[in-house]
Image (cartoon, rainbow, N blue to C red; front, side, top):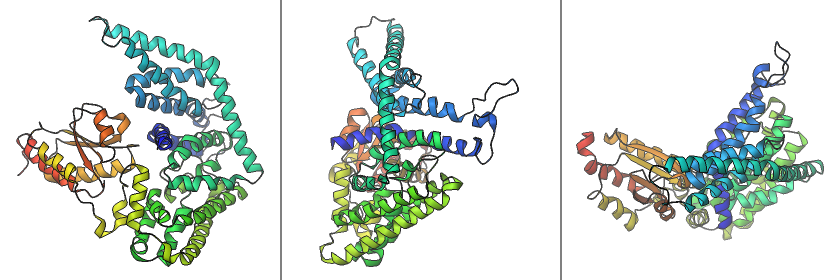
Length: 498
């Protein structure tokens, strides 16, 4: 559990900024000297009319923008906006201490600087004389961030540069000795145990971006994100499986391969854990294919959809990437189909496997209703149902509803979309429904919706808000209960029809 929380924290720093990484990938692909449409001023090559070298976008973005975005997000997760500002300044000291992109430095210095600021704020909390609050707050943050930037420049930067160099050399050594496929032995089981974000966004993405800046692409972006092994598992269940697993596998395959939500195939592995041998074999074949063809992606493929993968594939790597996905899927399918035939009597129940997956994940899967089928629709829990209904008699009007989950992107985004549509149809145009990570919750919202296992954490972040617990982000009876509550609390403001 501690490892999962740490992985969630790491991915929480990277995932909200994935769009910036993707933007950098497209800018690199288009405008560098060897890109599709080279532009010297944007790509950063050649000299201008005065003989000065072009700065471009590619270099500054990878050296300054991306690490600072990571640091700011990490700082905000620890100490709000104030922590984000201090984290950005402190991380600049790490960035300028070396010529390497300091992603690892940002992952460490960002939250560390915010934590230091948080401890300092506690020292004089409640002790500042009236009228001096702004002076103390601004100068304390300025002095602390400046000091941390200097410390980072002289001590932190060189250490992180050394570690980054070691990690990069380690990857190069694995590639040169044809041992990189062995990484699947760790990656594929870790994915099923929900450590995929920690591995992909916490380790592989920072290293991959550095490789991509040097070589135009990186194989590391596809070590975890390759949808082939998971597709092979689902195809095997479609062909050889039985019962509910076989009937739900086609829909799961579509969501996994085109939607990029890899968690949907995890229960199919947990039903028969020996199927990990199939995903490991598929992963190894995929990585081996990428190595042979010297293929990779320009930037992270997030989510891990085949659409996102192809969008980030350079023209020179297209054949290698496509073959890697297809061959990994075929290998995983063949091994898993054989294992399913040999272990037909030992296959477990899909519902139990889904519950096991959610227990490890610490929350309801956003796509578990696809796995459970019509009979698996969630029923309202007594506590959660009563919470929303009783609140109608005691709450002031609700204007801001927040869906919160670990990362604030996948599950909560889908749940927010479902509730938003229900509220819109009910005529409450004055109610906003947004989604975000629990770590970013504030106490200025009216109602917070979380999975029932995460509600205690959400209460700690937003104690004044009303909290509603659900066990299925896509299909929860609580959404209708919330709409009914709005008809009582907001009717006089919105003019909605009762």
